[in-house]
Length: 392
Ligand SMILES: Cc1cc2nc3c(=O)[nH]c(=O)nc-3n(C[C@H](O)[C@H](O)[C@H](O)COP(=O)(O)OP(=O)(O)OC[C@H]3O[C@@H](n4cnc5c(N)ncnc54)[C@H](O)[C@@H]3O)c2cc1C
Image (cartoon, rainbow, N blue to C red; front, side, top):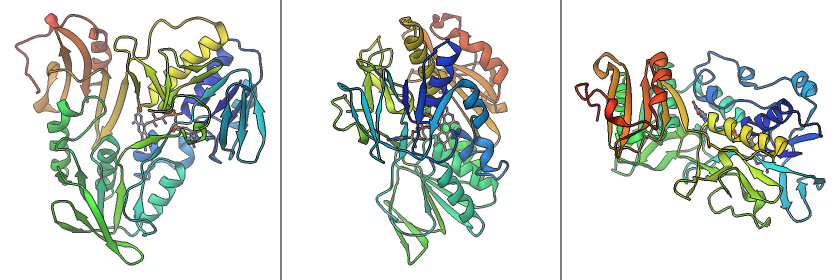
């Protein structure tokens, strides 16, 4: 077994292979020097300084040894020949495999401004988090570009540290995973209550500064003085090394509904676009639990030959200003109806419905009720209490 990419999807693949009794050799290569680590704390406990960076590690060398997983760190795969079953690394080594799992994730999309200017950051890796933390010692004002979930988390974290924060989002709504449009007004309220200067429908178009950024110019013409800019404008799947492989990498690694990309080649996690059997459309999902669950499905298929019957249901969580937000299922529905708590108290669980069926559940500071309500997904929406408050 060869696994390329040593993070959540790679490590979950390797661990599940062993859980399922896979007896063969497992080699995992990753281009980062660190042990596999989780990214969610980078924009939460590590940004706020509550955790040292090493708290994000997902395993110890002893655990890898116990599982018989050979981890080759600091080594990038540069090409794949699926017909010969060979991956070539940056140091020129040819690594032969029986089965390959591509788990190379995604990289932060770099902004078209600020190249070489101090105080300008992205946040995807441990190295990014360390550099951002170091700059916080002197920063007073931050502009966060990108009002998706990561931008919101960074804005909240920087406010908590006492910085003045301007959050700039191109779309008129704040995005929060699959529930963005429905939750946007509530998230906007949270930001404003905590003093974030929210600029939606605008984008950062240029930065000013000599060595270090001193101001950001927005598309509406405003110039905002700032000594820190964090760009959280999405991510791009790491497929460059597969460009000559013949795999379909038109939207990440395009796979069937069980993660198969080619004979003997699977893909899981942020790099993978699994085909939804209901729609026939391949889609990438950028959530940690999805990466782990896809990896588990792939590993079981490899270890047992069993054909998976179900795809992971998207599940996502975030924390903004102490508010725990959880989203399960698909939330592109037409309405959001509370089924427990209420929005004015800042604690509720709500169901999303489409065509009479519950497609998703949103939890807002009510983790226990959220867990119970998740069972409603896929059931008829008639049971929803219509007298309850409609959120949106
Ligand atoms: C700051 C931040 C906060 C987040 N918070 C949340 C959250 O609260 N909830 C949630 O559900 N999700 C969250 N996510 C998303 C979550 O972290 C990802 O979904 C998850 O990391 C995906 O795991 P992965 O293993 O597929 O890919 P990745 O974590 O991207 O790992 C891929 C690994 O492969 C390596 N690699 C890439 N190319 C090569 C190559 N050619 N050769 C060798 N190695 C290579 C990469 O360097 C990396 O180490 C967050 C992400 C970030 C960046």
